[in-house]
Each structure stands twice: as structure tokens, then as C-alpha cells.
View 1 (cartoon, rainbow, N blue to C red):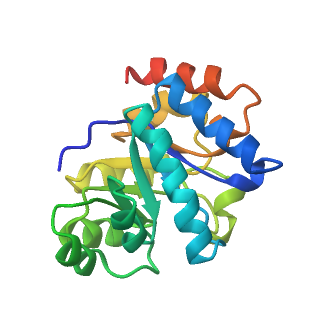
View 2: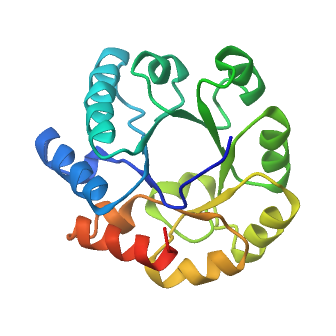
Length: 208
């Protein structure tokens, strides 16, 4: 399936004081032109996650953006999201592809060339690769993999690769030159203090 976006925004509601502020932040990013957003709230119980996913779907429909649900392809199907994003601890991509056929776009988180190749072989439509740089959200994955590792993966897989982990405005050119399809970001937009302006800035820089 063709990936028609090159900025992949990932949520973290804990950056905000309450649900209302979180919802407003998502709306600002979408209003700026973000065309793909992943709902990544791993600590929520199923019914709470489902409720939030329905709310997110209303917003993405309004702004003609694609909604991805982290890990839970059942919830993605239930809310009619466009895609699901799998981790290395999720159900394997080939099993999810068999279950959903072409109903969902499938993204997969990868942290090595081996994982990237396995995701591609299993039927992933795109992958995220990282952490490329240091970032608070990816500390558990250890030291950053670096731009050379991103370059190698981008060269050796045919699936679009989104660089993740410490991707800032100043690093966009570097990841593009390394062959990345685009950046996957959380804090660069949601912790910026000027969400709509920062999102527009990145979109313009990417030519999205």
C-alpha cells in the first residue's frame, strides 16, 4: 500500500495536564496539516483506549488524516482506523496481515536491519527505525543507533523507513540524506509549546 505521508506524529497524552488539553493539542497538529497520527497510549485499559480511539477518529476524519492505533489491530478495525502500528512484542506482522488482509495499513517498529527485513518480509507497509538519536521515550532501547545505521536500513529495505528517536527540525536534512522517507516524532511537536506552528514548520521543511 502506498504511503502518502512523510511526517508520522505519535501521541503521548502524559505531556498534557488533562484529556481536554490533549485533544486540543491533537486538533492543532491536524489543523496544521499532519496527515498521519498514531494513538500510542499503552497504559490504557481496552475500553478506555477504545473510547479515546473513537474520539481520535472523529478528529482525523474532520481533517482528512490517517489514524493508526498502536498494537491493537482489533481496536483499529473497530473504529475504522486506517492502520495499526506493531512493536517487536506485538502479534507478528504476517499474522496481522493474514487477519486484516488489506483493510489496514501496517507499520512496524524496528531497531535493527534484521528486524527491518523481517517486517518487510512479513508484509509491513512501512517501518519506523530507531532510536536514531537520544530521546527520553526510547531510553529502554539503549544507546542511539545513529545515522549510519539508518542509512544502511534505508538502502537495504524497499519499505518506506521513518526515522524515530530524537528527530528535531535541525536533523531533518540528515535523515533525508540518509534515505529516510520521513520522521516519526512525539516531543518535537507535542512538547514544543507552539504545536500548530511547529507542525507547519516541519511540514514545510519536508515539502509534505
